[in-house]
Image: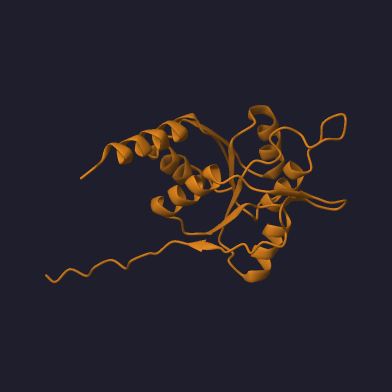
Length: 181
């Protein structure tokens, strides 16, 4: 049974997702298409894409998205380098540029602890290990946009606290059921 409170929360979530501007930075055509389809199915209508980090940074400054979803290992510029560049964007008076606090979801096939630490130290907000499911992506998108991140700035770093523990999220995949014919 759905209550009015549940219906109101669902309506707010739908409106939040509908108005969200998302930038996908991914070098695989198939993965870009999949992410676009999953985000569209969630009701997100403002989706832009780039194929690697330099193009992603250029697109970022053009559209100022509310959320960035990026692959890690791309050439010539990685998602790690692009994230650091976003975090280090400055105004002419050397203040953090508007939008440089944007949540960045790293979506990577590499879940090794040293890679996740590298992503965290580069300013990544959240980390998803491929393959991704619709449920996992929705959960991480909602977490990213509903929980503001605390940005730390030192002489050598700007981003989410590098002391925080970044836990990679993995989809729970169930094996196909073998039919008994």
